[in-house]
Figure: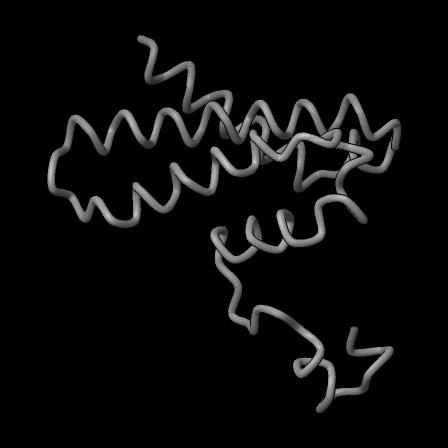
Length: 118
């Protein structure tokens, strides 16, 4: 975007201004779902909407109940891992399957799930 609009104007073309959070990133995925992400995630937005809902619930929780918060964390991690695996299999792009950031994220999420199940 900076290359297209220049250093000053690029931020004016964004729906969500930086700094971005996971919540704003998921909102962008939902906003641009059909045009950009439907090839990877299919036409259904349910998984992304579910992850956004869980994240918003977690953010509202504010440590009120450790047990509920722990369950929300598990749900967020497991759904995130599912989305990564889905994106890797449906993308057909070797770039996504070999991207070190994606691989690190997938590994961290899988380790978290493994530790929680012990």
